[in-house]
Image (cartoon, rainbow, N blue to C red; front, side):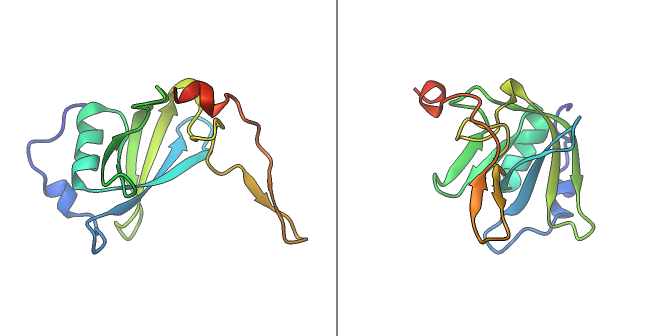
Length: 134
């Protein structure tokens, strides 16, 4: 990604919710795997464009969150798209370190539903979270 455009008119084209947020999906640019979902506000998306790395808005922390700021597992932006309604952002990314989830897995979507009504973790933990978040 290159530097942020001088004008912010491109941000005005998006449909932000009542809290000024928009859903953002992080997808592996090569495999197409969906790695995570998060929220962005205008500043987060602008900083993502400016830095070339994913920056989200953490609702629990009430602040911007540069993905990987603690773990080192940053997301390099390869492409940014929006859906047909301009209300969802798709980030095609390169996941540094191969781990997107705070549980130490590649993807946050590691639980699978089975017809008998149970959820089961089907993807392995690649690194113990205790070793990631010291």
